[in-house]
Image (cartoon, rainbow, N blue to C red; front, side):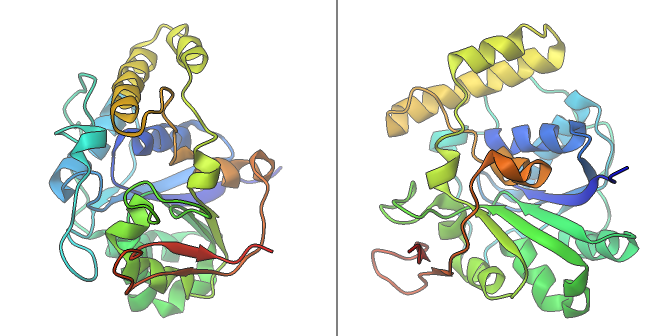
Length: 279
């Protein structure tokens, strides 16, 4: 019998992060050890509150720890034009039903990785600040990381600036640390995630489940669809973040190509861009 892959989800909920939380908790191919949060789609307080509320609506009970408030360099920026004022607008969500871990995100990641009897896969779906800080402060645990499968970057154009995807743009110095770590990395960039769309047909299938959770998901994604149409002219919103997890669940969901990746740190017009050498 194949054991589930132990994972830690590092996120900034956010509509697509919320879907990643649900997938991580429900799919039997993975074992969700814990959730850590990082400022990104909204402030750290907002996205942490959203993570706890998603746990409450879905009956998820795992340690949740609050992480970095700001990137390694500079100050945090949010994305209210995409995710709304709360960073998770569109549905009524319950109040949290358990307390945050007293540990920081880096401390919780280190604890869970240390205590796990198997190698752990990290799934970052927001800016890579927490992951970079973990790698810098716990080099002795690098050997216990199976993969870092992150949503971010692009082999083509960006979505926050012409060349930079939001998660990488939000903390390019952290992305640089991760990309230079030498650990096994899987990058799910916009070139892939823009193919994972929440179409009306998909939302109809979810709605037909006729549960409170299903209706919550549909309400959230309909709000997300509205902002994506308004901002990007895309009627069907891409569900970016679950892709980084789906690849760990089933490597056949996307074609993996080995390629060098670097992040632009100093370009006046290209800061945060991922430079991918695909031949």
